[in-house]
Length: 270
Image (cartoon, rainbow, N blue to C red; front, side):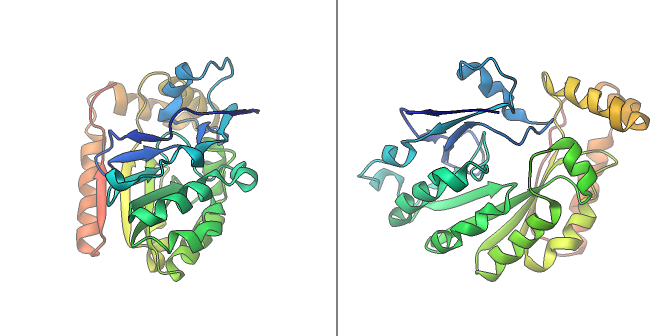
């Protein structure tokens, strides 16, 4: 893993996400090495030769880039973070995410912070100071074997469940981002059943194989789940209605069980 410190020029970026006005990314790159990572397009802006997932740039001046006059951001929605994880294990040393949160408390910002790490519980004391804060944990699988295959350097399933419980007990609005959903492997009903005592909302996203992602997914399937390779190929490159059917199943399940949810599915062929 290549880790370097850099002095950034800005930290608050206008968002293209439907649920946020601005995004904040304390780090460039990521150490999780998820085979499905959509943020790999960021590599072309980094001057790194290493593959995505093999480098992290630390914006050591991140908190200093929050302007003193924050009135223009009062009440705005911030998502932390869109193309990295705000709680990479380097955050234990640098504490950039914590420092940024501390700067944003005073402007009554609406915070949505999402991670694959249980380190998020360290900052419960700061998160509780926001009047409007959503704390989310990403889960792609209940099976740690699958989790290690697709996102090898992330917290275990049990650590994430424990983090959700701690966040909920602290009075925070908690959600689980079930995504990406891997066909025939992601037990999204099981995830809901395992976590629903301390989760307010579920967000669903399906696996997107745009660009170079498909090659990594294909190599993983051939090596670990060869019986699924043709099924995945048919879903993405054939005339399959798999995702339309799955979206309907999720919507119906959530309706019948009174589960607050959002679904962000990509239906276009790659």
